[in-house]
Length: 236
Image (cartoon, rainbow, N blue to C red; front, side, top):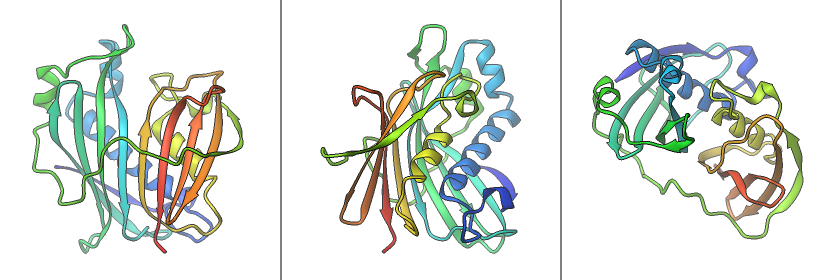
């Protein structure tokens, strides 16, 4: 298990003074990347050999989002490698061990020279000893949403959305999608599926739907082919 201590800063809170939904995902992603740095398999080093880990899906359960100034710790560990995929859990808790959020995530190993997924090599597996999976409900990495979606607008991909893979970073998708949630929509769970990697110059068309206690945000190309699909489950 790898752990990262953190504190809620003003730049990451929402209007209620709580760590934003997308900022929770960012904190988990940051912990994962620090893990890679500290075991000598950083994203920058992987890039030198035309490799990268790209996220396929997130499933985050929010019990309580910490407030401005609050200290918290994020723990992360891989629990499975199979073929091109790696699976990783996250746990966010207070110093008193109150669980704030937990998550499952699925990633795939990518050959940036060929543009194709590739089997995880043994050196990469050895850098991350697996541990038992967290006790949670494990959902499919596929997110199924209503067929009837309402077009809300479009977003041009600019360089500020890109990461070192020259793709829109997964945290940016979550942030953009969360902007279209109804006002005061309290998120209990987030499931996100990443289909295509949007690049500089692409246009994301935002489509939404609401069904029972779930709100869906889908980002597509002009032909309605999804880049990203998300399901936000309400607490109420």
